[in-house]
Amino acid sequence: MKLSYTTLAVAMLSAPSFAGDIDIYGKANVTAQSSDEGEGSFTEIKSNASRIGFKGGQALTDELSVVFKAEFQVDLDGDSPKGDSITDRNQYIGLKGNFGEVLFGKNDTILKQSQGKVDLFSDLNGDIKSLWKGENRVADSITYKTKSFSGFQLGLTYVVEDSVDGEDATSIALMYGDKALKKSNVYAAIAFDSEVAGYDVTRAVVSTKLGAFTLGAIAQSQESINSGQEMDGLMLSGKYSIDNWALKAQFQTAEFDGGDDKSGITLGADYKLAKNTKVFGFFTSFDMDSGADEDYAGLGLEYKF
Figure 1 (tube, helix red, strand yellow):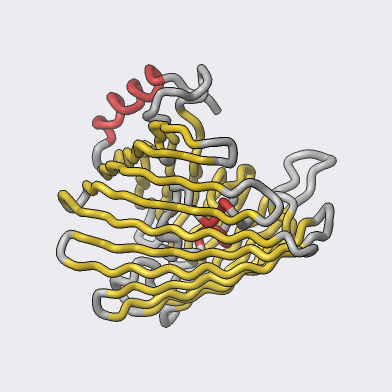
Figure 2 (cartoon, one colour; figure 1 turned 90 degrees about the vertical axis):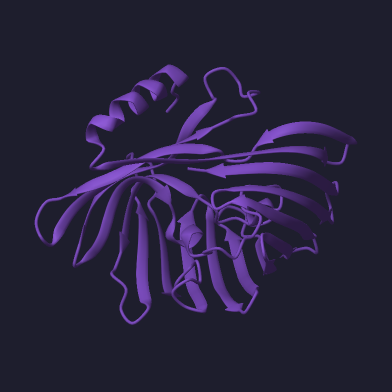
């Protein structure tokens, strides 16, 4: 789906009449960076999954509510092809109650959601999707999550065939604790993709908070449905918070069949200007066994609303 800025502006102006049920939210994240993808370095201004969205719902009974979300990515750097400056992100409608929550539409798979906050450089060049599969946002999907029972929650994504020649797919995860580590000091998950975007994936996640330190790890194995090629990978992340500063580091590996090994390391620092605004810097370096090595260094500004 492609929208113009005019269409989005009309939607925003119309929203206040439903202020009791609709929240407008978003994130603007832009970096000025030097990028080297194997053919020499160049400078660029980059919009990193900046977005605007509308979400809300309404109680239907004491135990049942309808919920919805319509979220769009906005390329703030202004260099998108004509008509592609606003694109779809998660968009769905569903029901929420004592049974949990069921959503219909376009959404992150449960395996993608299971990573929690362990990827400290999500949406930047150091994002785990640079080396691994499984970070999928799927259309024509049904997402179900149970309520939390003693900290445990089960989630399932079912991707429908959508055509006579289509193939269905599933993503499932068992999660424990609070992803943001605000209500618990431990978060853990085990997740599986079956034939999602051409891959079977198994992912295990754990993160914990120890005083000012936040530590996380993800282990992943994946197999291509078409080629049968397998990969095993590990990602480790750590963050140290002091006053308005957050110092971050992340290391990721991807070991493919045939010895095609890849790895990446990212170092960064955030400085919080306000609760919803930060400046940050990062350096990412990828060592690609059979491909060109890549290096990225940037300074950025993020504002959430």
